[in-house]
Length: 471
Image (cartoon, helix red, strand yellow):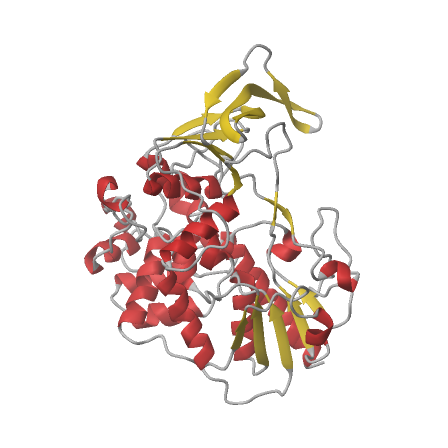
């Protein structure tokens, strides 16, 4: 390993963020680039621990110690080749992954972990810059045709893998552009869309066909698709948002996060929007939901010029450091303060929204209660605290409470597919749904999860589809 004492000599550093006053004026990526020397010192911190739990924690199985060592020794092209053996879209995971590998880094037992995600991103961006990322066109084709419905992380990963194996792949996307969640669900300040376009261009050169504006089950029959292909993969994501069924939900000014973020991404791309504009400019905004999507809405609202932003989370505030409930090498579920939180937000935990008050058909305020959580035989039980009710003035409320399951009526119900207990498409150990030759992957199969897990699921499904096609 490069420098055996590096973890003692160098402290952990992450990419620097652009100043808040500067970055909230646009939707560009918030980070500045690492210098070559800075990234080399970060790679030097990898301690050759013998049993790399970072590899165990990564859904893709990335061998981080290998490419860390190569970066430290200045072998960037070798590091790139090592990285892409396991990571199919490192330019996405290097920006969006919560770095599960870092949570299990051996150095993290009593020090700050290695900056694996930043090193990964540095490698792939240098590879693009130097022209090492080129299309890999299969030399032999199998003659088998696969249709993939959905061009989000899992659909794209499956498409790339199946095409690499020589199958003909066509990806159907209901939106006007490829990318799914990556395109319209994630703000530009986390993932600028030219990053997606760059990868899609490579995939097209490799022979993958993308068909946009094809809402299978709505404007085109699923049976028309299934009859023309040897296998079909459902990768449409988990798209039914969890609603808040309280009085006043129907008032103007209450929106789902997915609608809010999608509209802003379309505006950033200079595209038309189908509905009335959703803007936080000059408004007091209450965001209900404390996850990453809520954070994305905070950053968007701040950039739109919100007067004040509140974020309510029903769960307790996480601890700031790892404790006995999250032993290493499990990923520590500690308090996460994102760049959006730093830009301006009032965060509150153990809050349950009970009623939305309106005036003239529009949102005026939200009434909430404090809650407490107690451990019992069933896990955790929530109790409302009597006398804790309070009212918060609000002009706009954004619901960021996750997704229930995939859409049923457009495809699944028409095919009489089986669902699991949570409403996701039920598959066997080979990722096959209840119809022969039809498979499912990503959030459509597992429920809402991480981008990196969706990518991993798409690759695993592709392997099963290949086995099915080649008997």
